Length: 324
Image (cartoon, rainbow, N blue to C red; front, side, top):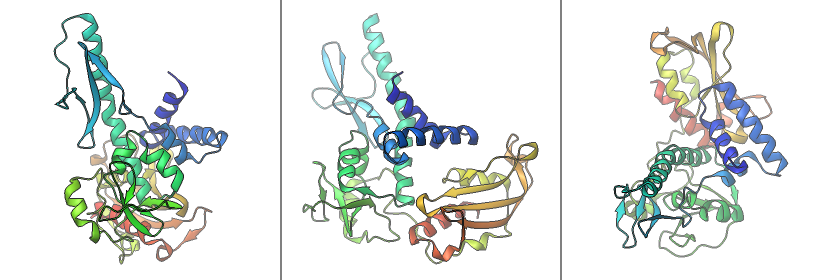
């Protein structure tokens, strides 16, 4: 396995491993690699994103060249020279054809979790309001065979203007007019950006890679309303599916805290009592009382929720709603 592919697997582990210690070790290893290359960890993740054969690779089979394509933003297919779509190659008649069909089926199967991972990574970039420089956005997102396809289904904020990415990879306004280069680019969020001019564009695009335009916004609610709330232990695992992570377990593998990182803003910690086991079925665990929810800045200082940026506060409430 080459170094870049190994790093790609490590990158996915750092985000998706079920084991907290494994996730932490993978993230620490990536941090070291990124630092050695003069990059931030998220910049390294951009460079490690797989292309899945979408960069013009051809699948040769019975003297026919099939192009790899992505449909519905989540599934790899093949296109024959006429553009017709197929998910499987014709039935193999010899060992050479069996090997080609097996390689394609393997790529298609392995691509599904990779595609889901990259979509989740972009959604997290919107949640934490990550910013790309204009140059990095063009070279590492728009020009990327996989990420560029997702980018064309999303809305972006270029400095103070919302924009879409057209088929040629250029940022455009709602009327399709070209927009000049921007110093900074981030994913647009309905809590702070106006999506109204994009109604027609969104209708024409169909389903987005993740919920962006129709995302629920919560700007006036206070997270402290969840203090002293009692919830089923199984519901806490819904938080994990929304970006929360378990803190290391303590005595007898009992876990008492989850935290939600919010990029440079810091993280939110949620403490529960009596705690839930890291090894038994959560449905068999007793109900848990949320004894504390706190916001910790990147410097480790306690903060107040009212000081959180609008997007961070909205996304925090959105995740906590799964406990209702």
